[in-house]
Image (tube, rainbow, N blue to C red; front, side, top):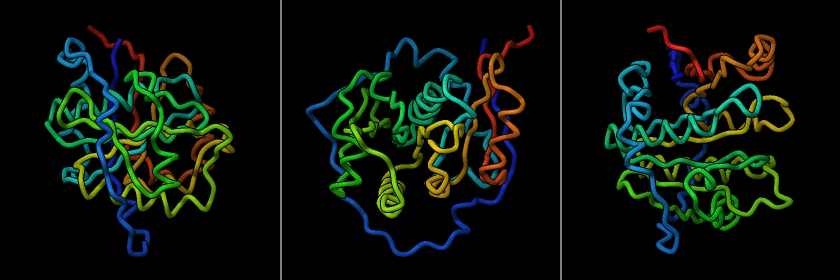
Length: 236
């Protein structure tokens, strides 16, 4: 089984939205935490399936921010986000940061075996970003932080915007692992405007056609950069 990526051209939604001047946050690398990406896995072809050259023409420039989502949970979204970020960092030697914005079910810290805090929640509260560097020079992580009894609200929009703009100043790619779109009550629709486009993961073994139709009742189709078909049988 493998992944298949399908892209479509669109205008960069985020750039068409007026934004005020941003307050940049200080960024520090947390030297007390370390993680790794297994080199034997990284050098397998799987990590290079996300071909930078196949992105739409308007994305072939630095400072690209992509959100990764899916119709529902359990469709492989977080692993895709982790692989996408690793591919940009390792395969293309681009400075990349991976953000966990999945408040309900954060998993980036589990994949990379690190303490989840401090992370995103602390960055939003304290206006300071503390990143974890992986064993690869170009890959950095912002885990979820302490999210006990925590939920993103309207008051966090400006803080998230400042955080992403700060990271865009320092990194070529910002990959955001978002929550699934359904149920819509758990998906931060307004935060989707803070990324250049959404990559939507489709699990070919479980995603329902009705769910795909449902997501476009809640998000603009022009916000979707493309689809990644996960667990797809490839004809030999």
